Length: 217
Image (cartoon, rainbow, N blue to C red; front, side, top):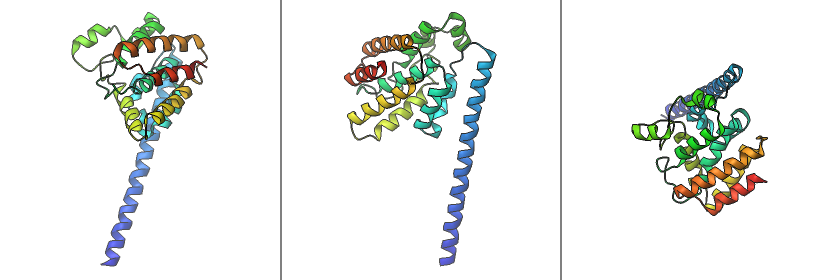
């Protein structure tokens, strides 16, 4: 009987190792797929925000996702992730269904992209048409490209001991995300619009202002 139990435990350990290896392989394949997608879009010209790839990017961990986004993604996508982090500093935020991300991202992308670039990424959608459709879209609450990343941020925040730790982690990640953006005017325009949107939606906090101050330096 002892031999049987040991054999069973060994078999389970081998199976767990096999599953972990396969999981790592899947994550590596997904990462390579994202890189190939970004490379292809760059070679084709134009400007691709690659928002749809955010759906799976946190499967390998939030920290790894931040590293990939800060180096490989368009500055507008990086700054949109900053907005996600800052918004969740508010106690009013409860889930990706209560977010103001759809309002911010639509205004931000319309502000920063040319008409052709916006059409390349989103077609002819408008915020009004998206909200009127009653379906999940690019610019609706719980938007399909943002909700997984928002949920990952929320899960990470729930593991922290207090609001001070949450604010410090947010400031660290946000500073990392903007560290390779060599356009101070863009960062200032982002902060201005983010402040306005957070105030309008009721998510503005002192911690958010502190994060904005840190990335302005």
